[in-house]
Image (cartoon, rainbow, N blue to C red; front, side):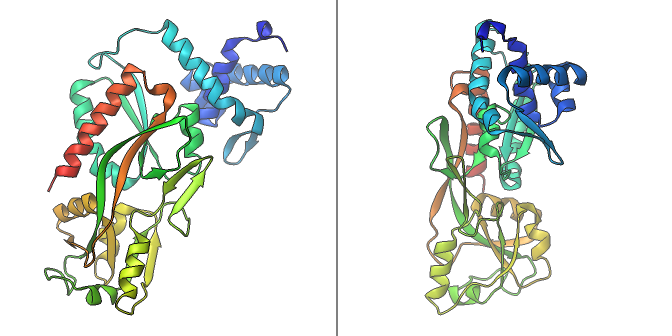
Amino acid sequence: MAMSNLDLNLLRVFDAILRERNVLRASEAINLSPSAVSHALSRLRAFLDDDLFVRTAAGMEPTTRALEMAPLVRDALVVIERAIGPKQFEPASTQRQFCIAATDYVTAVILPEFLHGTSLAAPNASVTLLPASRIDLTTQIDVGRVEIALGSFSNMPSRIREKVLFEERDMMVIASDHPLAGRKIRLRDFASLPLLVVSTGGAEDGFLSERGLTRRTEMFDRTALVAAFESVGKRPEFRVVQPHFLAIPSLLAGTRMAAVVPASLARFFVKSGTVYAAELPWEPTTRALQMIWHERHTEDQGHAWLRTVLADAALTASSAK
């Protein structure tokens, strides 16, 4: 296998298919015909003696060899782009497309202010939002499809960088016409209510690990909640478990259920007039809301600008009352 015989454009095709998992979308992303992409993939398969991608009902699934290659190929393409690309990033004239992964909660709380800022400073830039709950989030960061992911993370691989946007605490919300609405809610009263909770990843302990990255799938402190209930001789009744934060007000309507949600989201709901929010009848812990990205983007001027605008938007969201 001689590198001198490798057409570097084949790596560009490989990178596009890995990000899009679809030949047609990959061809559109790099302005080639689908037949040209298929032909390039065939050449690369022959060169590497590996299928690289297997066609499935869910799309083009990468082989083990492809996943091993992915971050190295992306790093190499980034280095080439920096070597021949423009030296300065100008928000006012850029037509760059940014891709951010976030839950519906973070999208509702932070992204409006972020989009307002970008529309003024970079009117020709575009933003693609992907769900942060996707199982292959680590792969999407590795291959460059996701530039920044927003959420609560731990045990991050060394290649992942992070910045804490703000510290979040829990609050409780009930329907605005709930019998307890407008009152100071005691722990014993709260512990008698059935609960609606959000789980975005299906992990029973509230965390999901994938390829070295652990993300929180429940944006509430289950351990503290269970301990508080047990202190008054109760066990929590998780009546509804579902993956959508923004469905909470409509699901609480007309019920006795309560939900425990991040404080910034509780304030967002209160503005709609559909819920009553109150402090929890125990001392809540706090957790960090973070943005994470691959280390290869750290010195990218456009990416640095993106991180600054997101951090400013998060600061505004966290201080809103």
